Length: 169
Image (cartoon, rainbow, N blue to C red):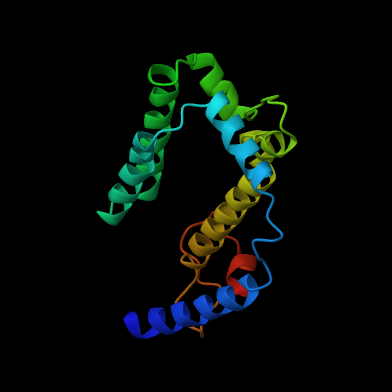
């Protein structure tokens, strides 16, 4: 694995270095950065302890736990953190997951960053993934019902499987 990862890492670091040379400290407005940081600290509880939830999810995935249970554990821990640590309400947690988080902080950059959307905004991508998975399952299972011999292309054992499905093969 290292013989493919290390060269890729070196190439990407070189590209990042080359592209990053165009950004100098002259272009950065320190006042704007301080404004964003102050707004975030005023609106949210910012603590390194909150990083334990993504670390826990990464730990689950690294221990070969399936992705769905690991992500569900992350959602549950994040919801509990919102309610018990940040002092939010359970209804607000569910609403934020579905519709998206909304804030009017007065800082345009923070508002643009935080007001994105929840599952509703991602539904096109989610539905596309679900439709592709369903289509793949149908295609995979429909071809297993065809006859294995090329001399008998229509020798289909279950009556529900059509001859057209075997012709596609």
